[in-house]
Image 1 (cartoon, rainbow, N blue to C red):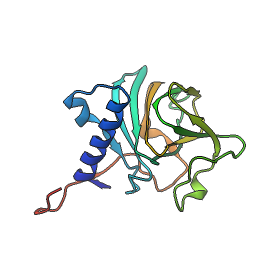
Image 2: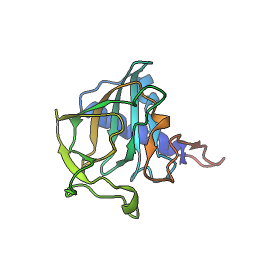
Image 3: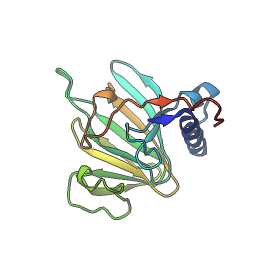
Image 4: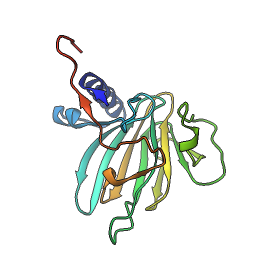
Length: 187
């Protein structure tokens, strides 16, 4: 759970990162940036800020902003019915971004969030910089983390059903809960 003040602050930080990467945002888009804490209440460590440009029954296009050192937790895109799951292309427009997939443990630049060693199982590191791109097949386990200056990336995919993603951390709740500040407190 995060507060409305935390949500607004993360939206503003994400908007600044996106605009610094060359994405021009309308005021409506700034307010539409979704803030995901994955139910962990550790937004600065594990979370993401996501602006959806389009999401139809066939395609999705989003921009994801990660604050400095912020991690989008380890997950995979599950099959749904006869659909094998989301195929996703990530393209970095500001970074660096540290991407982790199955393979030999080459984790050097990034850091596993404290106390989460057991739930970050894939550690094959790929350091992605401006213009680097990768396509992840349905079901590929992955996670990524922003470098020290934050990261901004495009996500182009087949149908997005992010609420159905699988996560290795059993504590994750995909739907973020936003709490109002107690009366009398000013954010």
